[in-house]
Structures are given as structure tokens and as C-alpha cells.
Image (cartoon, rainbow, N blue to C red; front, side, top):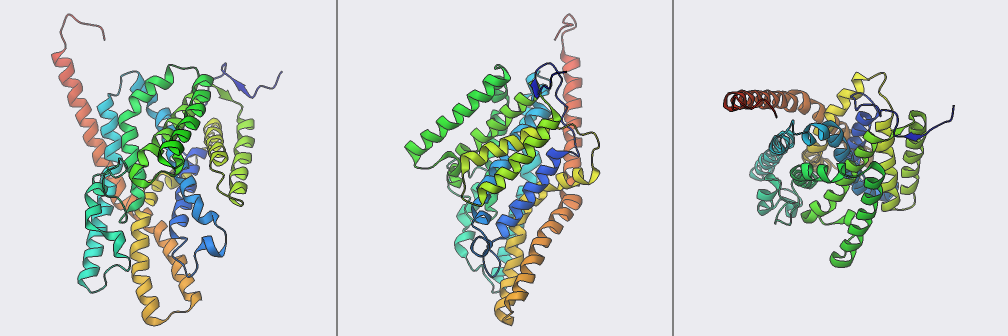
Amino acid sequence: MAFTALTTRNEPPPIARGGWLDALRFIVAALIILHHFQGAGPIALAEGLHPAFEHSGFLLTNFFIIDSGYVLMRVYGRSVGAGRMSHFDFFLKRALRVWPAHLIMGLSLIVLVGAATLAGQPPRNPEWFQWDQLPAQLALVQSFGVHGGLGWNAPSWSISGLIGCYLLFPFILRGVTKLGPWTALIGMIALYLAINQLCWTFLGYPVWQMPMHYGFIRILPLFVLGMTLAWFAQKVWINPRVAGWVGVAAAAGFFALQAFDKHALLSLVCISLIILAAGAVPVRRPSKLVERAALVSFSMFITNEVVRIWWFGFGNIAIDRLNLSESVQWAIWGAGVLAAFAFAWAYHHLIDAPMQDRIKAWLKSRALRRGRIARITQPVVSLEG
């Protein structure tokens, strides 16, 4: 029997919880926490260990965005494409997944900064807590060229950009699915390179390093790349053994590249191969632990900056007043990293998951009501559609 690595004759494995895609979500969220905390110790990890701790941040964000496009395409692509889920219902569902948690974190920061200022301990870096930045950030429009979004819970700029991607998802879906899998993949690679060159020429930045207030320009091509990878994965069966080895090699290549420099385009290739490989490996024994870790990953992403500001705001006061040694400062730093994980776990289980359960119940009842109204108002003579 001939060994076939790629074919359109076999059915690709369905997307499932508790496998490598879930593991990747948690790993990337954990590395993002480490990236955001790396500069808060006595010596920045980027200076004391390796610059990769600093420049890997934008690559991890790229990973997060591509993975988002990939997963949403595989989970919702068929239902949105077939009209079983309307464009508005898709956008509403996705917006309600991210905006309430973001708003809670933003309001928490306002309370924290306001209380500390009233207590005589204003922020050490007040430029990161300017009140005129808040409206755009709370409304999640800061990545569309609107004034605001610097400081506060600054990493939420990527959530802002994804909101725009949710709006465009049905239209991108329609365009991608009109193409064959290989045509779509090759065309997307060419389009990404062309967009990158245009950004260099007219804006002076590569597309993957656009300023936060133009973050949507950076995020959209990456999100579309993720959707294209998903379309390829749905149409082309990849031998699981080959996928496993490709995924391992791509991960090793990704980390090896960071030891020398950013190598953004090559790193992007590695990220794409890792995600494609993870989706091609069947989930034969789903791990409940991995599934739960993945569910917490969004809370890890949305809360870690707030925890960092809170933890080191008080930690730096203690260090100054008590003249703590460097070893104690490192202990405070390590405890802060652990606090970010613990807070995200608690936030997910106590706030985010219960809140999302209520939102899902409301969305379900809304869909049922609309279904009943549609059945009542449908003309009796029409039995089609």
C-alpha cells in the first residue's frame, strides 16, 4: 500500500475538545503571561536571559489570532455558510463571549487606580493610566484608528481587532470556500506577502508590527490565514503520523529561530504548520485536564495584565519601603506569575463561566422565540426553504 501523506479522498478528523488544539491554547496563554511579566522582576528576562522574552510577544499574539481564525472556521464555518446561523447571531455570540469579561477587567482597573490614588499611592507611571484613553478601550474600538487604548488593559487591543474580524467572518467565509483548498492556501500566502509589502511601502511598518491603534490592519490578514488553514484542513486529509512529526519539527524550529532573532515570516510559517498539524491529529483520548486548561485560557489572557498591575503596584511599594533583597524580589515576581494563573482560574470558574452560561441560555431562548415566530408567520402555502 502506497504511503500517502496528503489526500482529498479521506475525511479529515473532526475538531474536538481535549486534544492538541486545546493544549496549544493553554500553552500560548501561559507564554503570553510570562511575556507580560518578564519585565517586572529585578532584571528583565529579556536582558538577563534572552531578548526572545521580549520580542516573542508579537509572535504569541500572531499565534493567538491565527488559532482564533482556524477554530472559528472549523466550529462555525458550516453553520454560518449554510445559513443555519445568521451573520448577526454569529457576531452577537462572539461579541458577548469577549466584551463582558473585558468590561469587568476595565472597570476593575478603574476602581483599583482610583482607590490607590485616593489612598495617596497613585500609579508610578501615570502616562499608562490616562483617562482619555479609556472610552475607546472599554468600547473595544481602539484598534481601528480611534484615539485611546494605550495603557490600562492594553493587550485588549487584539480583542478589539477580533471584533472587526467577527463582523467580516461571513464574507471572508464566502470568499475562501469558493476556492479549492490548495488555491486558497497559496492565494492567502501571496495575499499576506502583498499586504506586508504595502504596509512597508505606505505606512513604514511590516503588517505584523502595526501600532496598536491600527491593530485591525495587523489582525485581519492573520485571522484570514487561520480561516484558510481551517478550510485546507477540512478538505485535505493529512496523515496523522506525518502531522505529528511536522508539528514537532515546526515547534522546534519556532523556538530555535527565537534564539537568534525574530525571523517573523519564518516564525509565521512555523506557527501555521503547528496549528495545521494539531488539527490533523485525531483526538482519540480526550483529556479533561487539557480541556479545562483551554477553557481557562481566555481568562488568562484577559486578566493577566490587571493582575500584573495590581500585584507589582503593591509589591513595588513593599520593596521600596522594606528595602527587600534581590532574592526576595525574585520570590515576589515568581509569586506574581503564579497569582496570574490562580486569578485566571478563579475568575473563570466564579465569574466568566457562570456569566457565559447565562448568556448562552439567553441566546438559546432568543433563538427558540425567533424560531416560533418564524413558524407562525411563514405562509402556509410555502413548504420549501
